[in-house]
Image 1 (tube, rainbow, N blue to C red):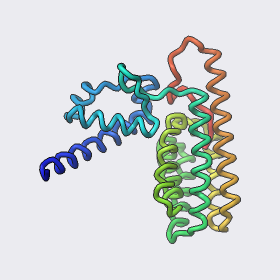
Image 2: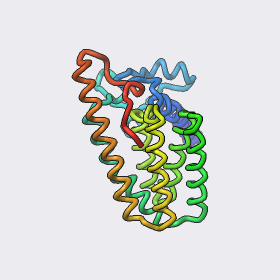
Image 3: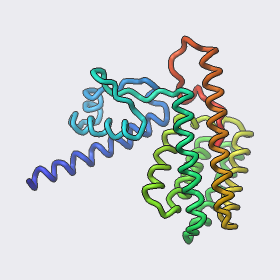
Image 4: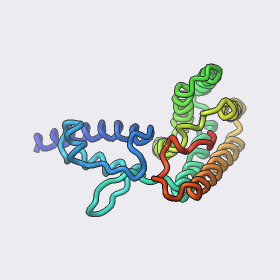
Length: 242
């Protein structure tokens, strides 16, 4: 029994590593919507058992990154207006709640971290270094979510936030978009400093739902213009703001 347990721990650790890598690659567009992830190929690539790959793929499916088609296998979840509406709807409500709770908690050191990141984002926007800005933005929001003091809530928000990264990779493609994003982050920091939890909740929820409507409209328009094209990719969808 002891050997069996150790084997399970090792396999779980390997599967977790595979999940982290594949999740990042899906977010960054390495694997495109409707792309087929084959167990045998992944097992060979990562040099792990198919059991570990199967576990990793099931985890990604539970997080909404993959869909399991019976008798065919695992595929990257498609990007469509309906998927965008549902994901952003859930994220808007959960993230707004996490932000409000973080402001109520006022955990020591959080405001300093947020302000530091906001200033670094301003510097990145001046260059403009969009990749650095994108990463700083992710870190900013994760700190906010984790400061809610609600571990399960933070995990759910971070998961839905990662899913929407598939649509957000190009959100900062123009200086105007980054300027609007900076304004939004400055308001969130101001809400935190002044303890305005309810105002922050309403503001963030409204912004995310606006983003969702904007992105849905873009997808529908491009779908009409390119009805015979392949499914939308991360880098083809630009315009929704954070």
